[in-house]
Image (cartoon, rainbow, N blue to C red; front, side):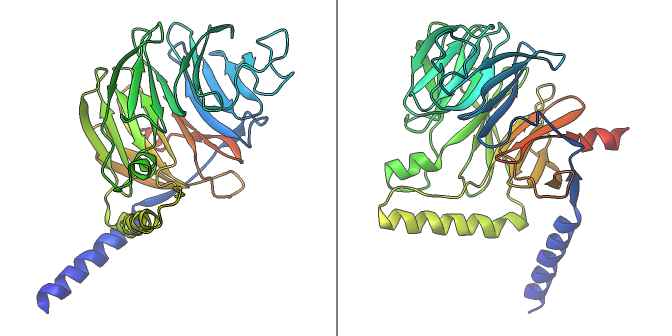
Length: 331
């Protein structure tokens, strides 16, 4: 009885400590007010430009380093400035990224293609990919792609669109192959050292896996705190339930957004309106609940980590700017 009592006290104390460790984080302002419903991604390209993707409208918007819009590639007929005919160059974009050499990559799930554009929006080539869901520009003009179907988590293509390597084995979560592959869908991010980060959207224990540029896994950054256990257990029960029914998968995402500080490899993860900050060794540094300036819950689906701010987007609420709380502490 004494042992059980002590264990209960430890569990309660851990829960109280976790709750006390959580802070509220309110956005300073909404930015890019023309973007809201359909928001898919906000990325800072290797060329320094800002890329915003919202599907189907307004499509892909590109801003220079001064914040001036310099390009628009639309997804609706007549809305495209990249073609004289008004024909949309993107069918339905899921993700985008910009490379250091100015090339633009869009994961076009509607067309089962990776669309490649020049820095001025002219189409260069299309890479056939079955159901692409995430894309990340890599060094040496390579591009990494995550899909809904491929046996591996990541496919890497060279500058000519050739498949040069595939890596990442799906986690064994279900017996049915199509169900298990669905549960391993992920988002991609990179840092300045050439690492690739794969954020599992449906893993019961929220996980971001870091790879080097050749595809060797370096470490897992995982949220396994006591307060996360009930949600993880419920997710595993739901996996068992859906597997027994044999129907098409239908799950609520666990991890909804990931952002990486490109300068030091620190990782920020969103679980709807909960924001987690991990250092580069995978230690959780802080937990926040995020809100709009008006006090509404902000359920993030994209995170951009910049030197002095966080840019966090939500579909349909739009894009918001936050002061970096870790930088504020250091001032």
